[in-house]
Length: 410
Image 1 (cartoon, rainbow, N blue to C red):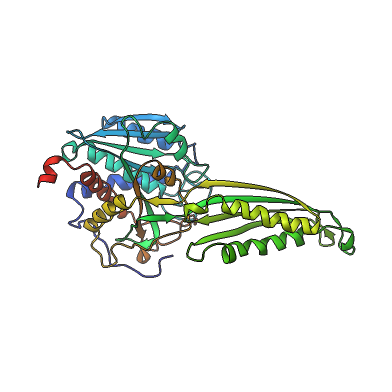
Image 2: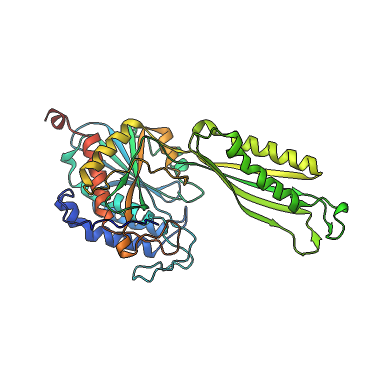
């Protein structure tokens, strides 16, 4: 949670243009609509229908059904120019909401507990504003409404479906509402922002028996415990200490009785790191350590290792553009926070591998209102003032990246 309060942020801030301020009630209404009807990855049918209906009513060109439920809106400026993409994720989480608010989730066991409802509302508001101000930019803006960021991952299927082509995208930006930062701040940095996400599952096969006769067994629990301890040496003794990484065992299941030595055990965990050069290393090292321990104890094993998302790596030039924009929108003393890395992961990383871009955090917590619960918490919520700030940031990114020749001359 955020531990320090921030001075109130006013919607009549002069840095947010009047027309976007006027749009704020609709942004809140859209966000709450999405929040009340959360949907899991690749099941965002209600969300996609709502978005498509809005785009159609605004006469914005768009494609639906991309990678299942994804949508891409295309808005052209009044002159030829570059192509900038804006990405927003739409999916929710399998969490039962604990907030007592009028807009709480109406889908049992599902909740927007990570801010994706806000991301979608901000992208929708950006599309609305740009469609009515095509004279303010050159080129084309593609707004990508992506399914399944929380899993199993919608970015790769959308890229494979051609969302970065026709016209070809030159750069991409995206934001994540961030309750680890207070309202009125932004986390922007070049290079690694978020970590790679990899998972593993280990199944151990020993030999069971009576708890009073361990010499007749191969104890899978003892072997599993050795593996848990050994895996912690990978970061501590094998990885360069200047390259941050995490190996976490989050599940350990074995045994059914206190006087029986278990013949099998299952361990599951996750690996996180920033440096792309480490890709493939952890899978190899886990296999070596687990294999050595099992061989020494007379057990066998099966390792299932999955590389899910690569690290989120921001292009330096695009990060500088986003930072310069954020500095024009945010005026609080806290301002821009460059040291905002997290070991959390995001499949925005696949878009950033395909084209230069920048993913950034927009502070959304407000301690004074109790809106500072962490992401994926059943009481997660954010200060909706940030919605207007998000639209303003995106619009200014467009106006700067897709500046008209006359704007450069000025």
